[in-house]
Image (cartoon, rainbow, N blue to C red; front, top):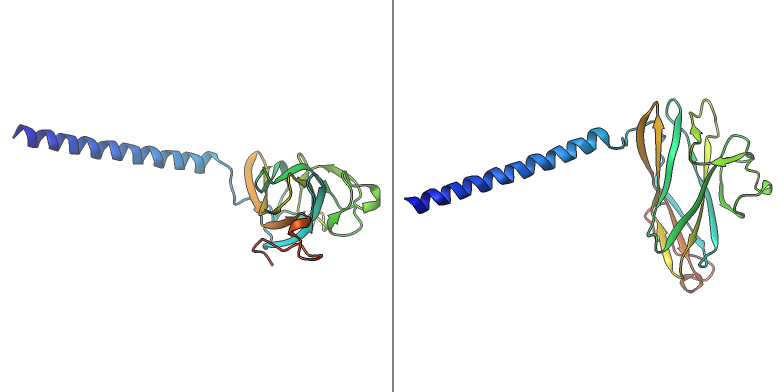
Length: 199
């Protein structure tokens, strides 16, 4: 009888331990959901899209394809990062251009920092920039990202993460803007084969 009782006690202790772990894990998830960044903020969502560009190691590639607006109110950018392997592609700078630019968005900008000849108007650091609605600023804020590859290869930036605040509340938005980089050995003639899933 003692052996059976000991086995029963051990099973009960194991069940209690598992229950405690599950409760703790659930608590961690709930805390993350309550206090972590919100993904349902007012930054306007965009459909997936992508393009490709030749890029030799160390060459600065400046992407201006993303335009930021909100569905309502104002959002202040607090962080910009790229979804790419940091051993392959590095983000070296982020700026925004407002309504003073000559066209809506410039896909590939030739200089970094962009020169006046690019027609982008007043440029500001992305961190601290205020994004608002199309009704307030019809052209929105053009996000300008300077990147470089670290070695020869065929690499993909899968997207861009924007963190921002609205009335003191923290949000995170993921922009599905894919960008493929090709060094010379990975080019198909004059074309850099696209690695992403976007159009």
